[in-house]
Length: 199
Image 1: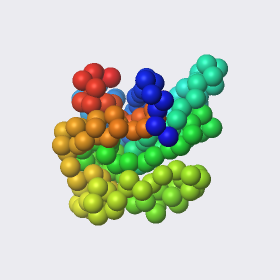
Image 2 (image 1 turned 30 degrees about the vertical axis):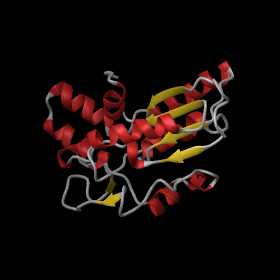
Image 3 (image 1 turned 180 degrees about the vertical axis):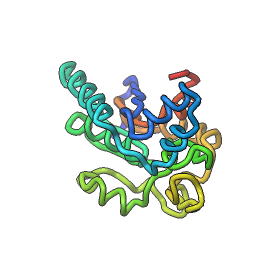
Image 4 (image 1 turned 135 degrees about the horizontal axis):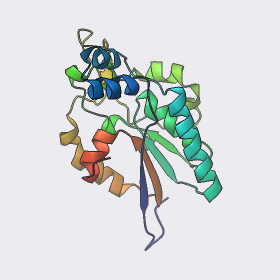
């Protein structure tokens, strides 16, 4: 379904809600506490906190009150983004695509939060993904590879290319989507680079 001729495409970029690692990272950076930073970075594929779930629910309430509808929600396969996409946009969007192309660079020093789980484990954690969510863009062994168990947070899946190498292809792919109202749920570091903003 391509946008109607002359139709204007609108894209919304939504950072995931607060995740389990965020309070440790924020406080660790503020206080210069390496122990807190390490604790936050040791969490593999963190889920949303109760605050993060409430943030997503508040976004949903706001969208419902405005009568908003979306053609497509694109999300990364990291749990915090998937949860945010589901809580904020279920029933408000016609379709969902999960792609690792907009994940952060899995730098070893940043640990577990930069890594996710296998497609099978993701489906086990979030059974709603079987309800019409498109996971075909997750190609294990290609753009979703298992990393070393020796890094902080342990073995997890990540995109093997740095964010910078994926930005132009991601922009091109997003521009080519045949939909008028598209939401991208993801990560502020990627959005900063993609949009040239400081979120």
